[in-house]
Each structure stands twice: as C-alpha cells, then as structure tokens.
Image (cartoon, rainbow, N blue to C red):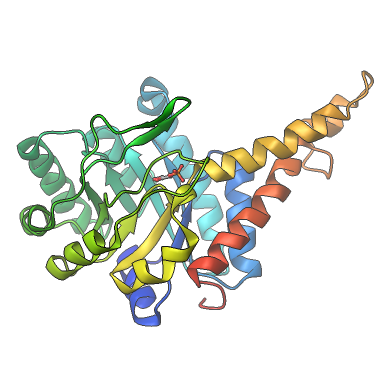
Length: 297
Ligand code: 13P
C-alpha cells in the first residue's frame, strides 16, 4: 500500500473521535510487532523510528537511510493505512535525509532551542517538506524526563497557548506536540497532566495536537484529550520495557547448551527477539484499543 498522508489520517481521526498510535520501533522485529497488531485490529497506524535515543554520528553516517529503508519496506506491505515518521530528529539535516530516505512525516526536536532558531529551522523544513508532500510535526514547550531519581523538570515548561498559535502561523507546521504535564520515559506512575491547559491550547490552535510521553499518559484522560484536539499519541518506553522483560524471563530458563542458532536471528518461536516481539504486540494492542483506532482502517 502507498503511504498515506499523516495529516489526512489525523483529520479522519479527529472526525471519528479516536486517536492514532505511534508506537516507536527500533528495529525490524519491533516494527513488525506494530504493523501486525494494526493489521489484526484493522487499525490505521503511524510506523516509524525516533532519533532522540540514537547515536547522532551513527544517524548521520547512514543510520537515517537504513531506518528509512526498513520502514519503507514494512509500510509498503501494509494492509492498513500507514504513515512513516522520522520522529525527534536532532538536526535539520537528519530530517532532510529522512525525506530522501522515504519518511513521509518528519519531526525536528526543537523543544530545547531558542524561539528564533526553532522558527527558522521548522519554517525551512516545512517549506521543503511540503514541496515533497511530506507532513511536518513540530513541538513547542518542553517535557520533563523521568530519571532513576524521579522527574527532572528543571528545564521543562508548558506550551504557552498564544505562543503555540504564533509558532504555527510562522512555521507552517502541520501538527503540534504539546507539553501539558506529560512526561517522557516515565513508567512508575501516571503523569500529572493538566487538561485545562490542553483545552486552552486547543482553543487557540486548530491543527491536530500530539501527545509525547504516551507511556505515562493517564488512560482515564485519553478520551478527553481526543476531545481537545489530540489526534496522535507517541509511545516508546513501555514497549521497550515489555520487550526486554519478556527476554529477561526467557533467558532465566536457559541451559548452558542452548541452541544459539535457534535463539538468535532464527525468526522462530524461541528467537529472543520474537519472544520480545510477542509480548510487545499485546502492549501495542492494549493501547491501540484505548485510543480507539481499532476497526477504523
Ligand atoms: P515515552 O517513552 O514516555 O512513551 O515517550 C515516547 C515519545 O514521546 C516518543 O516521541
């Protein structure tokens, strides 16, 4: 299937009163997990990879190209509507490389940049991306990160509703990730999200909104978030946690004579990555159903 425009998919989601899931993959096994669930649940899906946790030199060498090739392969064979995002790229050059490598959505993480620099880079990106039919996600405001010591909110700030309106007008971005108390990388408890703040942004910004930090976004607030303009939830940490925990349990059962050909790279039932993938699929299914995109393909 050819790639679908994420903006169009988001508009459908808005009309249908559901959210899209972007379940961040890191390799072919994890991307297969996401796509298989989307097909089993007849759900539109956002496939993709994120740049935030990756080595920048690796990305610049040919990492973006490799990720684009893997993503394009799976997107092409999808039986449900699909967009392919390069999420949280670290530089403008990486997003441009992403467009050349087959991603039809790009997101440059400017959340820590000064206003003028961010406006300039996202405007330039939007101009180039739109000429190529590619959607641009921007972010304004900065999420706190969860650490082993707790939540580090020293540099975090909420999205200012009127700044969000100006930012969109100045840059031409197609959708906007917002900071409303949501937290990146948090698994210990739900994030303290502020739905009144989300509503205030929604009153000023008509383009679709995006929630990052999907792992700790409270399930009980999902429906309200969709009502206030959120069309996509980004999920990462819980997927890797689920994947690695399944592998940890499997490894505990190993005998010293374990067949290494069976457990590494075989793609059979006992392949460690298949063990992780099976567990990850159920977590993706749970969240995809929570967002209500099942049965919407
Ligand atoms: P979590 O890892 O907190 O789910 O956040 C993922 C994310 O926001 C990717 O953009």
